[in-house]
Amino acid sequence: MELGSAEVLEFCGKNDEKLRELEAQFDVRIVPRGTTIKVLGEPTKVGQACRLIEHLLSFSRSQNGLSKRQIKYAVESIKSEREEDLKRIFSDRVTLPLKKRGVAPMTANQKHYLDAIRRCDIVFGIGPAGTGKTYLAMAMAVHHLISERVRRIILVRPAVEAGEKLGFLPGDIAAKFDPFVRPLYDALYDMIEPERARQLIENGTVEIAPLAFMRGRTLNSAFVILDEGQNTSVEQMKMFLTRLGNDSKAVITGDVTQIDLPAGKESGLVHAQRILADIDGIAFVYFDDRDVVRHELIQKIIRAYDAADKGAYQQELPLNYQSSTRARVPVQGAEDRIADVTEDMNPIEGV
Image 1 (cartoon, rainbow, N blue to C red):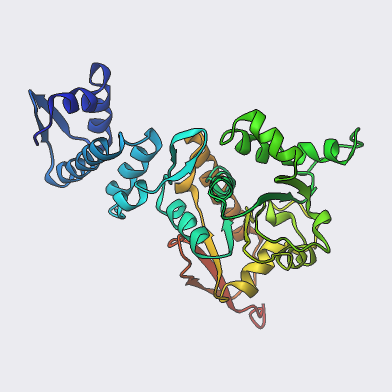
Image 2: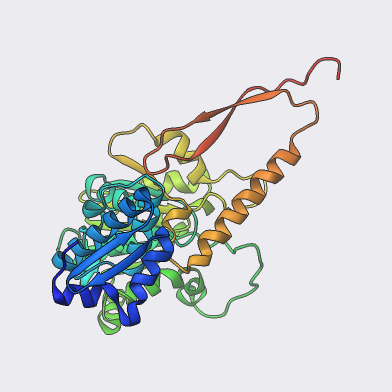
């Protein structure tokens, strides 16, 4: 494989650290000789390593390379033989004031998410923590605002405590609600200069409000984000979705495994999945542990909790539980998502 002299230096990294990383990932030996790189090892693994190197070189030449997380995703895709169109995924960009290179999707599901927001007026992003649901939605909101596709951004969140009572909070309504919306502020300040962001909030161009304050409003020419949607009731979700006015978009994010509603109260996000999935103009995009873009340990933590939850479910089945059929549900961006469809919940007679 031939490289330019500058590419060899970039590809090998300091003290050949990038080479050693690739060798460890694919169990091959990579030997640089001048501007030539040879990959030695078992044919299948050599082929996988060469495909990754070609991707790295392609993006290095066209878009100043890939991020560490993008490289990790490319490695996982190639090794698992589920290689998507990586060029199509990684070449996408959302332009923002404070991001010279813009914000790019790190995974196929994130790319599906951005495309869905561009295509549909209502989009649900559902999946575990750390998968970029809120951050990408905020990036698209800021992009729509600076490109004058909308006149304002409205950030909404239910005021539900995460499993603990905070007690009385001092201050006016803005001060009381501030702890609940801090993640939205963090994302906003990462994309717009802090002083400019404060001005936008003060003049109402960017509004951050409790979900309860949406009742009775019509939101025209707005990009609306409902965060933590799993903590809405069915009535609240209906109320929110029917606020959308002309030239507006709404993105609802949530994790159905982290519902903090009182016991016995159905989540509006779970209910919406059942009744809205077949409506044109509404998109559901699902994320999983492969889409986690925070610390690499987060993936392992999510998998551990998922495994524990499945074990607990099996232990809770009654002893006389007869059978259930497991059906694969084809959902965009979640090929491996499995749903239990119970056909017979009757106990075995005579037991």
